[in-house]
Length: 494
Image 1 (cartoon, one colour):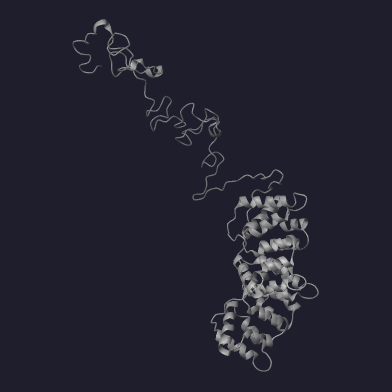
Image 2 (cartoon, helix red, strand yellow):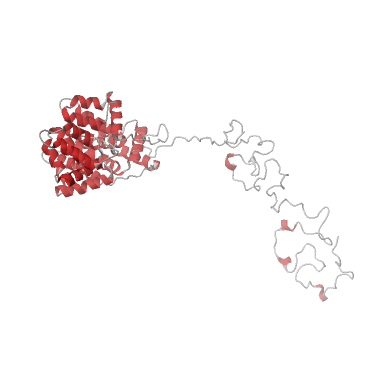
């Protein structure tokens, strides 16, 4: 068909003189054949895109030879698929020639379409269903609301010279919740009434030691501090001086230890460990490896106030070598105390400890010092498990193979305390009572300092490790009022 009035009834206007095309270029016939509008006939266009021009005398074209059928939705030739409901099997595939080779693991020409999955009638021959698709061959439909857990392959060793992980990435062991201490705040506490009880127990001839045990052994440390203040307020006397004058021996030492604040007691124990001939290295490690940063800093403050020199100065004067460095590092009270565990850092630390010890001739003690004194306890517990997974050996065993003397015992003590603090103290208590004689200072220190923290857990670990109760061993190794006071702090038999 033709547009109305076109061509004009009288024919086309005559050509200009000379037959030249007024628009420039091209043949002199009019209308021109297979040319474009004004001035564009001189452009060098891509011939394939000229294929759709209408033949002379008809617009728009119709019938054979007209415009080719639309590829659908204005897409380029071989476009993105037919209208909805008319998709070919496989759905809307990407334009030909634009698929990535192998298209996500499927050979070229067999890629499943993007529009539907699975395509009507199933996948083409040789094309596997996506893993995990419900209903796919070999797959079991998951329970609604649950997602099947993926299975990860075992990772290779970070350093080729290191042993690979035989069981894959380790998981840090989480410690069970602590049961706590045997001494708690007494309900209905009246410090003035307790001060009166203590006054009567020490007044006149003789001393009622049982009354002192029942009173002070049933109060928390904070309550005991209030009792001291009330005693001085009511009677104008110092309770500590009265107790010293009435008591003696290990019973006196235990009661006086209970009357100090925890950090005052720790500071005095540190001083006793350092002064005079010889040093109680185990006591220094025990306190510094088991206290928090805040407690260590407060111990240092009290130590300087009481003994006129810093704890670090006394440590440097009384120890030497790598063991001195270990103590100085711990006394800074600068351990990371976060609960987060970075598994990447865990693996790196385990690798570095292995490289610093078993993997080389000699030992890089400074690497052990840096990691054991600065990393958080949850992180170190994960490092110990990773180390065992890598090497098949516990960290303590490796330290014993690589070190000796005070440094060996100090490093092992830090590892044991970090790994399981109640078990560490259970072992310390057993050693204090084992064999001939009793290390009463160690026994008193642990029973007093842990009575409000984890004595119930220490008792549990003691029975697990030695097959008998802590209460039984204390009963067999001590006597008199001293024994009664320790059993009061122990809190019962297991």
